[in-house]
Amino acid sequence: MARSLDGLVLAPVADQAPGQVGTGTRFRYHERDGEIWAEYEGGDIARGYLVGTRRGDRLDFRYVQLRHDGTTACGHCVSRVVELPDGRVRLEETWEWESREGSGTSVVEQVTTRER
Image (cartoon, helix red, strand yellow):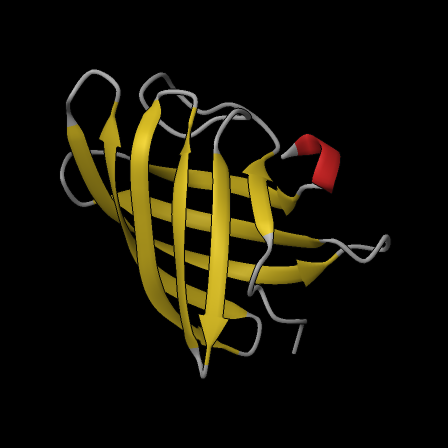
């Protein structure tokens, strides 16, 4: 199993559509006994939360977010945890909105202290 996500900060490697997470969004992860959760904000997102489980290199979680325009959205995501050659963590994600139409894939990677 890849190393723990607890205490790691991750960011998307590319921008998504407006009103979604982007390269300015930061996810602060926590992990304990197979449970994962994170707070996130930045870019178009004023505040967001995710909560779910981890089994090996697979995460399964729900997310909910508040945008700066006052709208909310929620969805489901399954991610694969990958350790990069430089030791950082990458999450390869497949997600779908539950509050509206739409789905897709994205990649978030651990950021260095200076990128936070």
